Length: 101
Image (cartoon, rainbow, N blue to C red; front, side, top):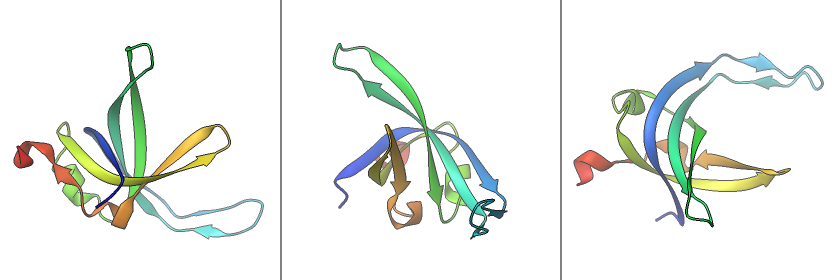
C-alpha cells in the first residue's frame, strides 16, 4: 500500500520521443506520460486545480479512462521550489474510481 495517492481525472495520455541531453550527450528513452487533473484544497478553503504529468510504463489502460476519475499511488520529491510526482510501479496499480464504487 502506498502512503500517497493522487486522485484526479485522466485528461490526456501522450508519448515523448527519445531525446539527447545537449550538455551531457546522455540519451533519454522515449516515455509515455499521463496527465491527471487534480484538485488541491488550500489553507483558506479555496480550491486550486493542478495538472500533474506522470511517467507510466503503459499508457493504454489510461487511454481507456480519458475524462474518468482515477487513484494512482505516487511518490513525490522536491526539485528546487517544485514538487515532482512519479507513479509507483510504472503506474500499473491505479484504480478506476467508477468501477471501484
